[in-house]
Length: 328
Image (cartoon, rainbow, N blue to C red):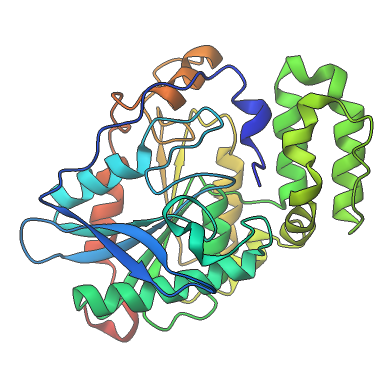
């Protein structure tokens, strides 16, 4: 399910894994999964938490820290958890069903739908409330995780509201086309890629025999059913039905999701709040120039801090917005 990373991150080399979160503040937490436990990391602030946020990962094999074997080792979710803890906010960051610590939750990590991930979010919300005593939990979805958050938000019991970070605002097919065309190196692959996207949008599987090897991670047979389902969702339609508070956070130097996506989401829900962070890239890191190579290098740099304004925007929003029912 490496929907966007395979080609966009080809130039980003992996580095050594980021250091673990302060063990004094971080503990393991579980929620029920289909065949075994879902696992994650709970980080509590020094005092009573002002709020609790569940961090839902982006596409493909993205782990609870926001890292991926596809060349991402920036640890954005770990850094976000640490920054929010300093602002008095508890977080739970999770491994998706079938992957990493949640490998036992399902035998085949690819045999999944967006609705399955949304169901897991609801299990996590219940587990978080039981563990922390919070009356409700905020759901933060990053990248494709924003779609999961929006779908979960349709059943808002126990959910304070949503935070959408670098979240897609258009149907996935449209975003994929734009991302592939944005990289000049993809020019020889475009006809084949566009035909594959059109087939999946029509609900038809793609014959990969003879497909260019560079496209295989994106259109591998084992992920095609997931992609077909994913392409049926319009994020703007989903957010229009959300009745809880929503914060949309979008970076100005995001190579994968654009400001237009964020504005489309905000335009579909008049109660949503939009925060634009000028120098943030897709993994929420600070990138000061329009240099594609430097931007991609940030995907593999766990020492690079999050862009200024990311943590404060989220912490301020969850502290100020009243949860469902009007009680914190």
